[in-house]
Length: 335
Image (tube, rainbow, N blue to C red; front, top):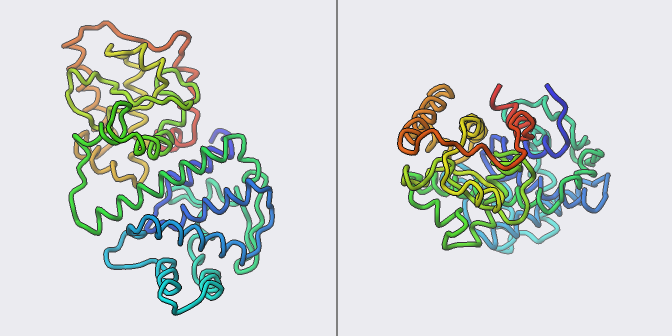
């Protein structure tokens, strides 16, 4: 497997965790905080305090389900509840977190999907119940800004909560017709846009879909196949781009190389436990071959309407050198 940067492995852990609860996101936020402070050795009590505070703050301001099983509370939720009811005090709560809150998440955090070896020991070693020793890979994650990494964790945490809420309410998850209000540049809720773009960008390798360069602050969400023809806002056809790239493309039909890239991006989503995975499977197919065939069919139909006049991308763009294809998430999900 090619060499990847520490931030690639970190993003893989955050995006492709098999999460039955939100513990991994809380631990990720704690680790980023310690790394940003340059702290390479974390005592267990410090970890328990930070973890408890992250969790307590989260469920106080946003009381949504933190695990997939309806009617169940996580250990951390129960501890927070006990302190709120006066059954225990803060010191006792933190002690309980140290004793019972890390049994699964600390040993299993450094896994990507079900593979415990890809990122094994990449970011810390631990003496359970005593210390975490943070490695340079974690301490130097500032190659990508800590704010960006923290935003991605926040967005991932939010989407897990959304997925768990759906499971608890047993409502069918419907994305169509709602996506414009959530993600599009001209949508009605700009706060939601800011909240979720960092999560979406991970599946795209954090680069603009059309030029392959790093995404900046002014991000557009675009329909790869023109909305004027398809008339829907399904996630399999939506990508993130720079404003200027989106304006250059406008409503033109993209070249076939961008359809190949869109197929690969969708497989990145299918490799996770993202709530949209099931929706894409319903619309495009159960296997990667079926999904590629369905998307190609849509492209062929649009081509019949528009004619074979393609927009190949921003000036100087070469798909052979697109960093999207060198990202860990793309290599893992498109082998």
